[in-house]
Amino acid sequence: MTNLQSKISEVKLTYVCEEGIQYKTYHCTNIPIENIADFVSLESRLEQPGFYDLEQNVLKEGMRNPILLVPNSVEEYNSGSLTVNTSYLSQYDPTKKYLCIFGNQRLAIAKRNNFSSISSIIVERSSFAILVQSKLL
Image 1 (spheres, one colour):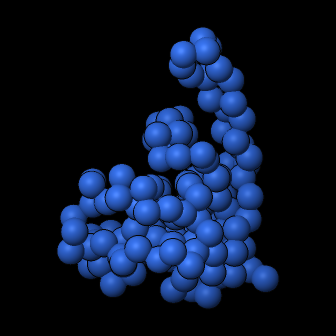
Image 2: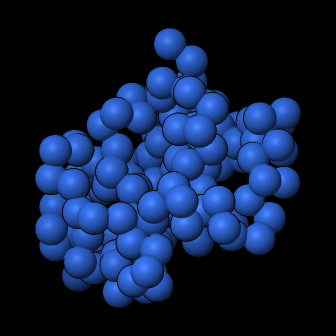
């Protein structure tokens, strides 16, 4: 089993909600690629400027950040698809356990290069993925 590994192993968040200030730690997990649905088709990723440079860098250096996943659902797919050019969207795949919210290029690189798993952080819903992503930037 070959894993596309991230240099980050955890992300600590502080956020405010109705209950007050909250602290949460998300840990990186190696998720089998066969369990992950993507938003964006592999073919459209190949057309993106800089994809091949990113691919070479990731293969040489590894990933800086893990990809961000949510439990797969129609609601999460519809929510995330609002920000993606519809010509790039993958069809919704209900057979997959997780949906990739951030990191579709890295997921495409892992698929193209026959990795069996990829470093991922699983969050409850896409709003938390946005918080984690902002922490990783």
